[in-house]
Image (tube, rainbow, N blue to C red; front, side):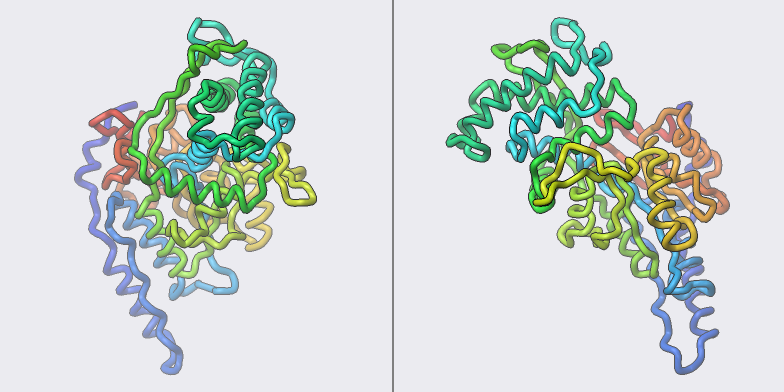
Length: 435
């Protein structure tokens, strides 16, 4: 379903200002003379918001936030944000993997890395789209030995591991390019071939042997580096002289993670209005804690207000390649279960607002009766998926104040929001509302 309804261009609504004035007046007139006046709530900056979406969020904040008739600071409303491709452009976990590979920031011995690489991955061949350059199928038992051969060489030679050579020196050896390419390829092949319960936690296991402090510093370095990179597709290929057992493979991905000014402002507006802010992400918890709470990155989330992928740790705090026992994976239905376990049990009610972008968010978008508005960052999701249907509903109900779903457009050529519902894929020049 590709067409964008014509009414998109005529149902634009002016930014909400009168509602805030009325709300503020009601607060001032109802309070006693000795009660300090509640500061007026500031609306969202226009930025690149779709104006209807911005108006609906402003109204929600005015209706439920500090200064409204029912606001209780002891039982505040709360909101839940997905992180990757919602709060930021692109995926911080994937970006951290690239930075980790390029700079060989690993804490695992070769033996520990093998455990991480093989964790819960079946021996069945990857999908044909992941065949090697000769058209042959690849599987975990053919590619892991290749990765380990290269990692052992790097482990013995690189000064950041157990060797004496500089990063520039080891990068000149074909083992370096073979290693980084085949690990990144393996991440892609696992995601393409196996279910989310298998694929989502796999990349986090590559932090094995590292401490929280090391992962958080890796995150800082990743964000700073990514913002200097162009928004583009990058391709890696294994060197011809090291085909290994799996053969020559290639992999490509989108690069150029960006912080999103409109989302930074939205976090600030919710916070100023007395909402509690939570992040629920399928990335690793230490990564999300750092990027969401570090003042340099502009989101200012409390460190404890993150629900994300958890791994076991040893007595010294070193990360283990094993999912934390008793915890749900924070993707799909696991996001709903985590919110119910940690938030609904705490507040006694569900989130007022949820933001997300993918099938991994669609459960939490639909599962809480208390949720009044859901923001979907438009990435042209499959129309047969629940989030694809929610997106279609947002298009059909555009301009109607009763709509639950708000579809926010984005241009993947710049990583920026656009003031409409339209999504423009990387390399395209024309946006559309639905896939």
